[in-house]
Length: 499
Image 1 (cartoon, rainbow, N blue to C red):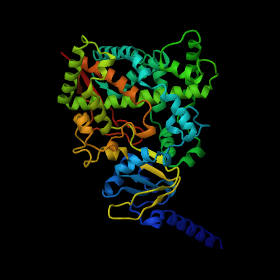
Image 2: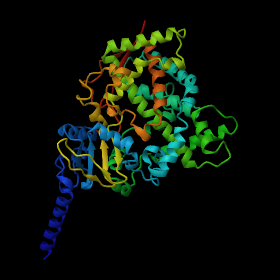
Image 3: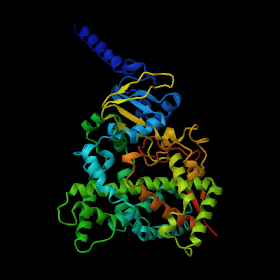
Image 4: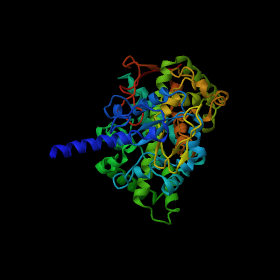
């Protein structure tokens, strides 16, 4: 009798898997890759064989005529990958009300600091928290930070100059992270992070702890994207407890300092905004959580973009020369000194930055959730049948795949900043570039990221020619255990004096 129960249980499980994995066939014989029970189409991600960005690129390339592709997430949950750029526009902008939630779930009881990032929020909380940050990252707020950022850029050059006397090989992400963490500490908190002078400094140590991949954060990131229910059950947080405690102490110290004297920086603007210029008490989680958002917007992704830009300039010396020629031409107009207005004249340098984000986007996908039923266009051009995307269904916009599509970007593996000069950008579909996202959920720190990156790169290139170090392993590969883009074995550079 026991054997019969076991057989019936096994049969029930098999029928359940067969039923759940037949969803796309049942709603309209939808084309998509063949799934596996439990893991859906993401088995290779969980075994570490492929990054999820690569998996979605394969889906994207396997159905070249499709507007969208049906696939299955963890636990056989149906989802789609968007291919058609008009549908990308619909999801991100035109029908934002139907897709206004990121498919990235954070439990506020486990991660109260990360939960304040607008990326992790939806609905009214997203509107409130994005509104609080968007008033901070305006041009009028960012422009006055130029002298502070320039001071850090000068320290950057001094650090390169002093270090290369004993060791001429630099890991690009390491040095760029030192720069951006110092910028954030100065501009956002009025602190010296000491990245260039103190190898044991707390601020960079804690900042790096937020983003350095560990087995826990790797599991948590993947669960937050693909199995949020299990993530909540396991209660594995993004922010280690000691980092949480340190940030709280640091922010309290900054607030106490500001009681005696205010400072014209981003933290002061945030605090004044949250406290209604000191007339209201500020919730500790709010101010500390938004302080962590300063790091996510200004530290990690900016240093990634800068490191990959330096790599591409080292590999493409003629493009590096063109960037420097433009820079030197602009500096002649200001007696050799970089100024805030002159940043806006570095058109080719900005094009090189955008091309870097195309080839090496820190984010591989834009994950969304359908928040109310939406009528999808026919899957293929010769079809007329439309499918209703049900509320709660995941929608993946494959940034990595779109940016590497030869139909959109001929020779996508070639670094060509000309693609992002104004006349060439106009000839492409607007939603062919998603380096900062698009629509209401556009990266809130985009202007600040370009601001600090331009200052750092311009100051560096005005002094040094960047070359690839003999230590560099080729071809350049990215780490498959990281949620954000990271080099597998580092980006190694040498710096030579520029005449």
